[in-house]
Length: 329
Picture 1 (cartoon, rainbow, N blue to C red):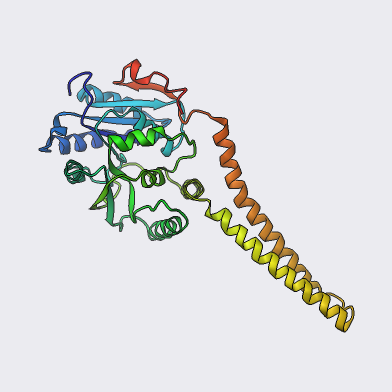
Picture 2: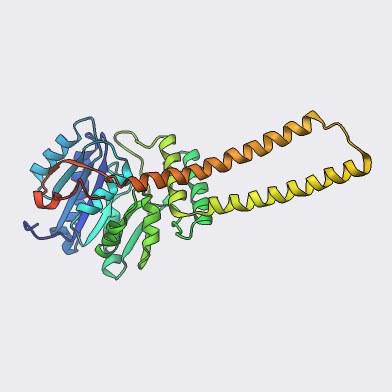
């Protein structure tokens, strides 16, 4: 790749404590790109985003950079989360086509050839669809399917089934995503929101060979909440309707009690029915307040206007390319 000339293809790779996986990733992806008949084979970059690693990930990237100058990296000052790291990659990727990938190679780089071919055919976004997820646990497959059904039911930004972050994005799409100001980011929802002409390629998801996943159940749950609250206000609207229905039923029940007292006289209220009513309405109120609190908390984070990420160090990037990063987003 000629110095100073933007590459055709950018591969952005968020990593955290992945020193063992980095050499194999660079080797395999570089070989796949070198075999391409597209000009991208002579003009590409692999941009790692070190999201606060505590191991020797940056040293592994530096060694890869010495062997292959197409390898570059930025290191964030701490762990900001994958969505922020992915946003940092989009901000610093220079390619006409940008492909987010995971370093675990579960999303096979061989699919790049099909993605680039469809991009050349005029598509602005080419997303990978996992047609076989047997490498994932049954619980993960069920929970993922359930989440996407709920998300697509509540949001107007429909996420394709079995599609992850692995996709090719045209520079026009990347520029739109970079212009979005929000801090609470759910990238799959933002990809869907951006629109543009999109298509898919199918692939078989491989098993992870090195390292362990950094997405624990609690992180996945938090990401799911971020996805729904950042893409839809339907939960708030639903509880408006639930509240209206409960209020109407309560009014009707009050009329029933008053009528009963007027006709049959005062009766001693039952303890069980009283406790059921108190617990039901108390739980309903706490649940609705919790949903409201999720939105209020996100409003607070947005109003603080803190940077989405802070760059600590870089490999293969000039100072001009990093100017203003800490104060941006």
